Image (cartoon, rainbow, N blue to C red):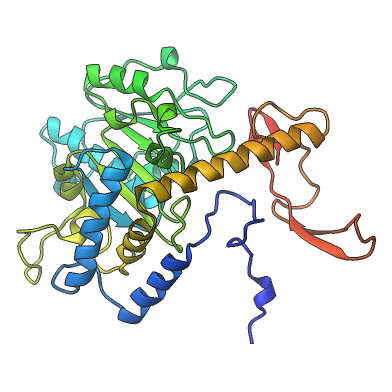
Length: 366
């Protein structure tokens, strides 16, 4: 029998490691149902039900996040693949301007594309860029301020062969790049803007928080996770592309046994041909919560984070910052090592905990 004690309790309310969401009861039930149905959600003909629920969930997501209703939406495994798809759409669009068919001709001899990221870009878009043939070390890194936000006046010259990758939620500090200013600068030069909003993009669902994302709707593509703030089971994320034709062109293929695309076909917006019906869980979460429920979930989480930071600053050692990044020395052991300490309350029982450290602004913190 497996040792279930070895499972990490990330679905509990007292789990604070990384940026990992829990699961709503309704999404767990939807996950079980989708598994029992065992649908191949790649084609409408193989699962009309999964295709329809995915289509409805996509419409609801666009409305909830305040994005163009005609945008293309692909349901993928998470933000890494969502970044991959969004950047693949960008690659297609930019090279098409120069008369280059990247899907048919490949990268050899293709016109050069310049990729711009912030100094604290997450590894997710870097991995996506590597998979797309851009290389993770060829990017131009723009300096950031003490919060982790990209400095617009430090951007390199932009043109119509430039991709600018912005962050809506720095994984260490939660900082959001100056989206509106940079998006307008990019638009003026014909550059493509992609936003990695794995968790931060969900702020757009709240009237109290959306102002922090000012200008996010001006981008050309977005990536976010559903298995973070929407609390659906792993794995689940979405890519959103303002012009669905660019995403479809970058993702879709033709084969003799595949019906002509007269209507939306799920496979045309994702890398996979065969995949599980993860749109069922997204539909269930949005149906159960509604707009107000999602907004309340986001706002409640932010209030908890603010309270957490307040108490850390009050009780923590010298060096605690004015943000939600708690400075501390890295442990001697490996990151995430399970450690044991005696509870002060009882003097004898043991508390198991995992200590995770991050490097932010050249300093370690919890």
